[in-house]
Image (tube, rainbow, N blue to C red; front, side, top):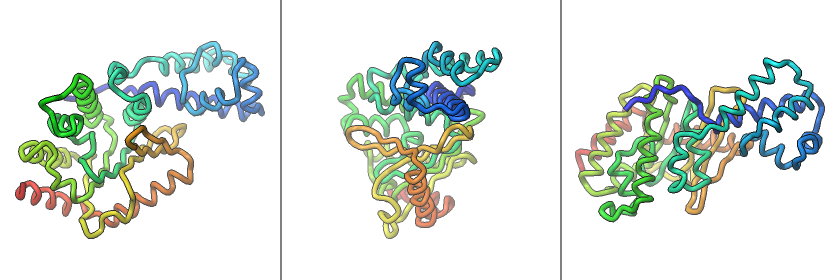
Length: 287
């Protein structure tokens, strides 16, 4: 199902707005503490606003624009329009009752990314999963006993996949461990259907999957991770590492550089896309 919306979503818009306000503050020569005092807030709140971690209030933005010397009414109106846009609920927020709070930002950032690079050790990436494969994961192998929450998380995963069919779809580069090709998640039929879907999707020019063979597995990275890259200059590249109790976002240059080096190593260790495709075809034949 195609989704032709070109909306980058509230998460990215908050980050863009925060970045623009930070540049204005620095150009005007004010510290975060100065800005916080001006809007009756703490220095840490200004930091969170500039990072796009919290929602903006129109009054706060107006007061900050005044402090920074922005008097042009058109420019001020553009900022306030961005405040309104960044406050709109994203499509994924209807799943909030079933989605961990720490995952909310990831879905919003994923929606805005121009390039998604991911490494998986156990499963095919969520953006490539079939409904039945995702359900088997969400229910810990007991899909016949799926709870309302598990069903909702499966629907969320399926909805996320629409971004791959947008006219401005991001480039997806996924690297998976060879074991993923043979791990029978959901049973034989579900596993075969999952391989079929990945083979079909990788025929699209913006989706690439590479496989790290057993003999070269485990050297480039100790666990799964994702790197999101954006076309907007205001948005930094962001790494994401999920664990059993939450998710960690990495946007410091040193951390992003480390992730980039791991991706470079994975590109060398993994088989080429064509060879990886042959490996998947063989895995399907063996299943």
